[in-house]
Length: 80
Image (cartoon, rainbow, N blue to C red; front, side, top):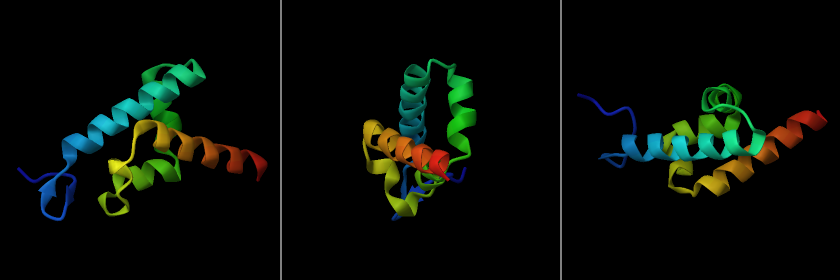
């Protein structure tokens, strides 16, 4: 079975999925929405794209850091 996410030959799939879960839980709590709704909101973001791309190393950051990046992106999009 091929891993979906690898970095320098190391399987980081579980790391990415766990980080995604942590971020979605934070968004869900902060926005008072369900986990599934949080995924729909987050999945369309550039922050999500960065998290899903192992080369960015976003997966190695903390969930609160990723949430801050997402909030920053949302604020910029609201201003535009």
